[in-house]
Length: 298
Image (cartoon, rainbow, N blue to C red; front, side, top):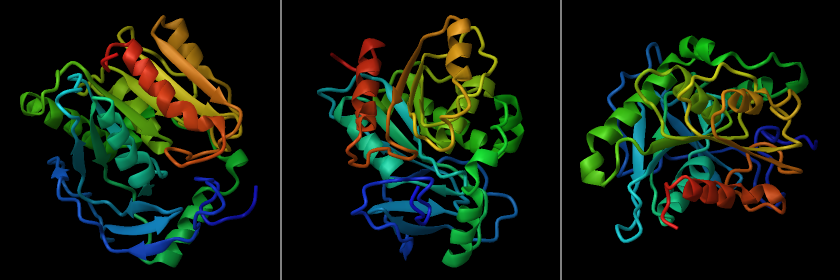
């Protein structure tokens, strides 16, 4: 693969700028603080940068939830918590967050972008770039992703944020015209890992369905009441395409609903970027799947 800044995480069309450029924190007038504590021991303050024509957040210390509500004429009373990815060190807020939520709202689903607390990284951009290059280098020698039960320890702040997001939506379900038992979650990369952990080890969130978009596929113990699972992955994904499909097999063995789309090309981090690969079809497939499960009006 051609060497590019952060390219192993998010390969996108060549015409988009791969340079990380610091930007001012954008206005987020609809963002709601969800009430979890500021990240313990944090010293670096939240900062944002642009890359690939998209916006990313890092050093998030206070979690928020941004609602994207559908036109009441097409609203289905279902909702989705959207968890962007970025290795728990940054968040692809635009490509894997706002753009996904807007598109879901256009199909009648209330969508809520979760800006969850992150592992601290160097405050300066050069230090941040070095930390990300180190994290995403030598992908073939990286250890397997931890079991969801281990994630309960390793991802404690992020799981707390996810559970708080579900609680907030349920508390305001009447106001937002949402059925409390029809709230799902979709995550991308690290956000997919958080989504799996939320479904498998959280005692409070209880998502009605989950979407794992280019996230880990290691085998897990699947509870009898596990939610329907949607999975999309590219066969040339450098992180998750070379370790089998144990997650799919686990869901099937537990006789729980699962749908799996393996695209020939797309790399990692394609999200809502315009690409000339069939992986761009994941969103329409996800919408069709939600419709089949009664979460979107036909």
